[in-house]
Image (cartoon, rainbow, N blue to C red; front, top):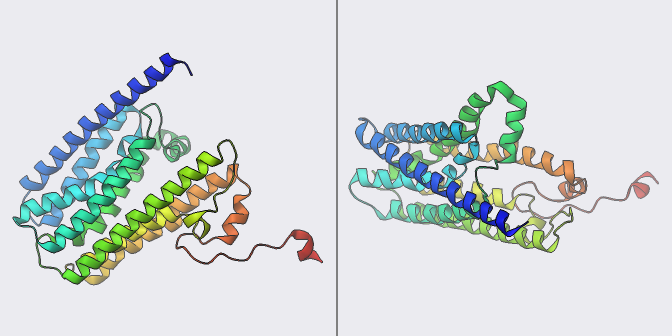
Length: 304
């Protein structure tokens, strides 16, 4: 690549980040306006604010022709909604403070990881490209409902208890334990990403399957860390939501989304380019790190 093309690439990246920054500042302003101006229960107001921000991001994705404008939404909005709730509540108790700082650490790490890998608006997440090819004329609807609104709602469900925690006295023990689990999940994500980056650097140009570090015991330790974050939020805010069964349903739904949607989609893509992954898949746990299963016997030995 020439110096000129490098310069153009850098300029496109800076311009894309500038547009994205303006979009999210406008989105946050819209969310705050909706949250503080709409009357009613804070959970309902927070939901309307979340949906309004999602709609604004979606509308911006249309002229940009890129659904990846939504990608940082997953990590930046949860702490922001807790800030709005804390301001509205008028005081910050130690329980919500502990949970907020744990979620903020998760948010900063995940957002930074996304930003370090994102190029510019000339590229879009491969999953969105696949959905666009499959859905064709229905892509605008799929983009809004499936790519953006569904993740918004499933993440919001995780935050219902946390928002309630801003308005009520929770259990310090549960808050401390839950915040610790959130931090553990964020750390496992960071470690898994570091191990993957190191592996890719050492095996550049080769289609090898990573079996190092956390990846030796889980096929998706980064996803496990993400799931752990939301179970931590559930624990920290337990006791603030009635009925309890609905509160429990939120992290269960998040776990199922990874197990039955995200992981199968990712593994189909990997198997298409790395046939050796099938053997790795038989040996290593899907999500939760666990003991490796025995090495499969060679075909010749099994038929004797």
